[in-house]
Amino acid sequence: MLTPLGWGTAAASAVLYAAGWWLGYPEPAAFAVAGFVAVGAAALWTLPRPRLEVRREIAPAKVGRGEPATGVLHVTSAGRGVRGLTARDAAGAARVAVDVPRLRAGATRTVSYALPTDRRGRIAVGPLRLVRADPLRLARRVREYGTPGTLLVRPRTVVLPPLPSGRAHHLEGPTSDRSPAGTATFHALREYVIGDELRHVHWKSSARTGTLMVRQLVDASLPTTTVVLEARPDRWADPDDFELAVDAAASVAAGASAAGFPVRVLTGNGPVAETRGGPGDVEEILDRLTAVAARECPRPTMDAVRRVRAGGSLVAVTPGDAELGRIAAVRSRFDRVVVLRVRPSGPAPAPPGVRVADVAELDDLPETWRRLGAAR
Image (cartoon, rainbow, N blue to C red):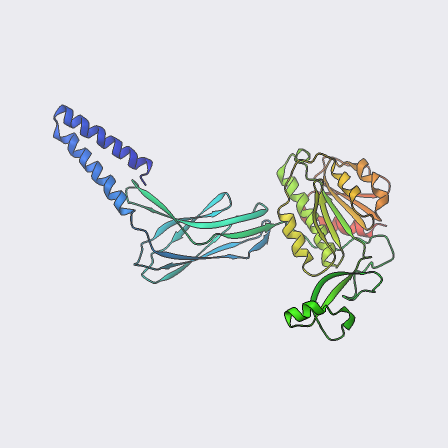
């Protein structure tokens, strides 16, 4: 298709030709013919479609916010050789310039480039758009190649230990996959290993898969860590503060889950993630928190806490002007309540039985968390 310069050249050529014909001067008509020839040659220049095969890799496919991620393109010439092309790859709303070097027939070149990871979310990468333009930039054609991929930019986390719940049972987390029958509940199926009790064998699954499968049980009496995130947009004047709040909530939830404790994460609009303390829970929590966004909620965020089962620890991640009164109202339902205020403008008195800590940067959270865990 013609570029704005190409359309302007064609229009100017038409005007010159008409003026030369009307006035009877051959020179303007000659210039007009040259312009038409240039525009036609530019359109023919961009007409051939390069036969390319494009294979895409994203390494790694999941990263924390701000961590490096690389897009790798393997470009193969399936037809005759092509000269160097200018390409643009989509990465969400951004466009990344990619230089594809000259390719001989059947040759493959590998091109890598950095992907933007400054914002959390599920980012669509691709398709690759090859731009072919003539030397005068009068015409340009854009063609798409390759299959789009997905980059998952998850919350950034720091390592945090779980807070003690305040009760005397299971403070060190689960010690066995085979919990006592009185407190155990079904979690998943796994392959039989020597030492498993035969009464836990799931015979239907074993017959279907041809492999002896047993029920994996977890202790339902383990204290649950409840993380509630304030996600109403009117409470966050700065989007960066909300991103820090999501990072803090993810760090708390991932730390408790890594220790084997059940975790539930929720906002005022309802549950975000709920795990029982099994393998792979950290990945599930981080994947779910990737999609969390500031959204309107008809009710106060702490009202969602009233609808969950009591017990365990409650960690509320809020802006600086935290609703400490509403949080104190649910204090009796939990063994331990902690409020993390994100970048507050000033100090606030802690209600009885509620621990309050301020978070200005994510890297400072481990030390703050250690002091909260040491306090009794």
